Amino acid sequence: MKKLLVLLMLLWHNIYASNYGELLFNGNCITCHFKTEKNSAPSIAEIKKNYINAFPKEESFIKYMSLWVLKPNTNTSIMQHSIDEFELMPELGYEKYTLEEIAKYIYRTDFSKQPR
Ligand code: HEC
Picture 1 (cartoon, rainbow, N blue to C red):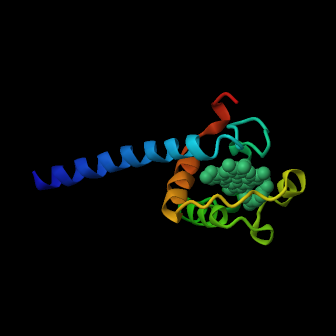
Picture 2: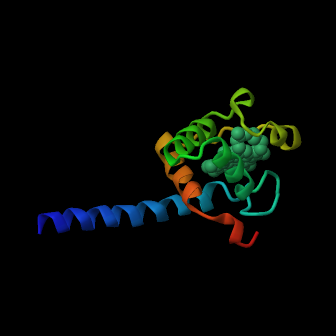
């Protein structure tokens, strides 16, 4: 019984957390990063492609992306060509934890099949 409860709680947390990341992304990133189309910034599908190439493992993907978004920096960018095209992304002032949830959502979502 106790084990079942723990399992249910873990499951609930996973579902809750993944929706949370999606909500955060749609509230805070999508104005500049459309899913598949270039806007005032590269699409999130494009960013994900570059990040997956550089950081195939989920843990390092989340770590690098959340730290970069916390403090965007030309020297640590893995998309120099985007900075040349759009200028450096502005600092948004979110908590690291929030950015980790968003990065996790990005890692786990296939944007390439979504419209715009
Ligand atoms: C005001 C517009 C704007 C918002 C809002 C914004 N971005 Fe960006 N972002 C940009 C631009 C422009 C670039 C391309 C230039 C660059 O890489 O700095 C970029 C690049 C990036 C990159 C590539 C980093 C690299 O290595 O160069 C990541 C990752 C990223 N954004 C994540 C996010 C996330 C996550 C959010 C939401 C929390 C977000 N962005 C919100 C404008 C924005």
